[in-house]
Amino acid sequence: MPNPKRKHTRSRRDSRRAANWKLESVPLSKDNEGRWHRPHTISPEGFYNGILVRPPKTKKKAGQGGAEGGEQKGS
Image 1 (cartoon, one colour):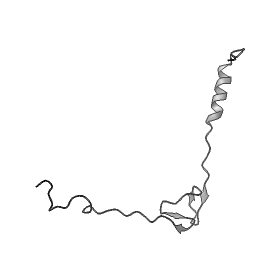
Image 2 (cartoon, helix red, strand yellow):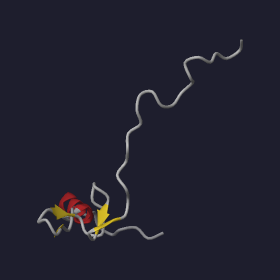
Image 3 (cartoon, helix red, strand yellow):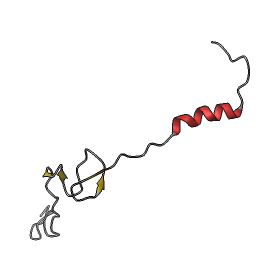
Image 4 (cartoon, one colour):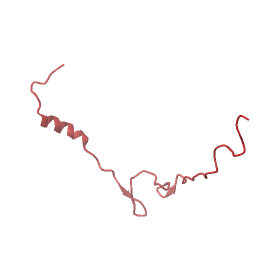
């Protein structure tokens, strides 16, 4: 395997490594109401391009789910 003929300086090494870590800004678009958002994504309310594509989530009440109060296991 070939080896380098001369030692590379720390500056040259670090500038080569730094070139791969540039951050890109996120592209933004305005919706119909003038709010900024990421393009091609669903809004938190569930709309895409003005059409409801995902209905809003509903929370379950505290009484729903789990075992019924009158039933006992193992008796």
